[in-house]
Amino acid sequence: MKFHPARLIARKRDGGVLASDEIQDLVAGVVDGSLGDAQLGAFLMAVCCNGMTAEETAALTLAMRDSGQVLRHPKVARPKIDKHSTGGVGDKVSLLLAPLVAAAGVAVPMVSGRGLGHTGGTIDKLASLPGYRTDLGPAEFQHVLEQCGYAMASPSAAIAPADKRMYATRDVSGTVESIPLITSSILAKKLAEGIDGLVMDVKFGRAAFMVQEHDAVALMESLCSVGRAAGIRMAALLTDMDHPLGRAIGNSLEVVEVLHALDGGCPDDLREVTLALGVEMLLLAGVASDAEAARQTLVRLWHDGVVHRVFRHNLELQGGDLRVLDDPTRLGRAPHVVAVKAQRTGFVADVDPRVLGDVVVDLGGGRRQPADAVDPLVGLVCVHSLGDPVHAGDAIAFVHARTSLAAKDAAVRVLAAMPIGDDKRRRAALVKRRMA
Image (cartoon, rainbow, N blue to C red; front, side, top):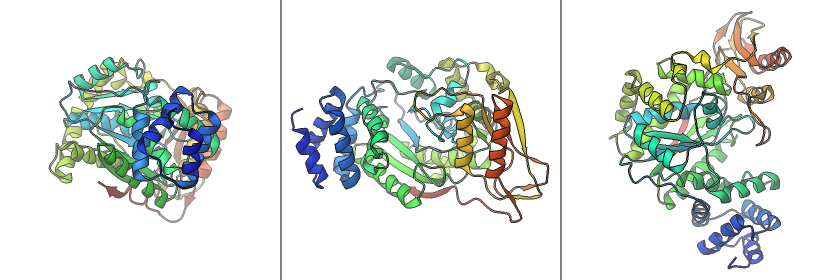
């Protein structure tokens, strides 16, 4: 390293500001190992305690991006816009949004992650599609993007390698919640996709990474300001994650929900969030004059089946079994499916997303540790949503499990997470705030 790391760490510990070349040097040390584990942990803790300026965070983001391969798309004339969610329960928006926006003339180069804890991951959902490949090399990724307008891939070790070591260290050093570190981690990988713009879906609520609204707003502001400083167009929506999104929770079950949604059978909340994010992507791309025109375009493409055709083309290009489009049962089914029945007549008084997300993880449908295997077939399907009227004995959800005992245990927890009351409750607004 060109600079003495202990001096840089001490300056940040004391609330000082680091120059761009000093930050670049620290990140280079992260990648080549010349910055030791103790030093990296101390640096992250100093940032966590004292924060970073927008300029410092932008410098950190760009240094992390440039620590590995940065994709370029010289043959793609369309504007290149991506979307990223901070994670939630039942969030399968990307699988609908990418073909929807691609159908409207925007290129969507989407590199996504796997799920961890109660939040699901796009790559895990795609892995439940027979044959679908997300381990695309740069040339393959480029080809798919050129051919159908969007490509979906898992991050390779060559993309922002500094982030892998930094994230692992944050996880064991109590520095995960730092907004500058969250911002740089998200944006470094997204900027490496070779995008012109990014729309952020920042969630808040019981099952969100940022539970409190004010924390989520602070993250929105950081992401937008740093993304712009790094040279891309940015927009963000603050969306509700106090209840699950859609009805299905669990990888193959969510894919089935997406396949039905492509043909118009989409839950209202999933449709609303997908369209809201799609509008922002079209506006960033400059292919729509205003929000209403963008929405009308997306609704028409969805209604006319164009989105279905784009999804099919991508499925073919990335090796997926096209037969699932007509026969979703090819995705498979868990051996044990148990109905969760209402114990009384009334209204669904709550649908606790954190509890339901944890249930799916315990069934084997998510990870506690990054190396954990995931069972694509297990999960939950909620028949009813918040405020729905039910009668005693009605099925309010179905548990899909590997064993009978696991199904019965999960059903008890689901029943507690979906209590029945006398008052009809309404869900809060799904999109709480917009930043552009």
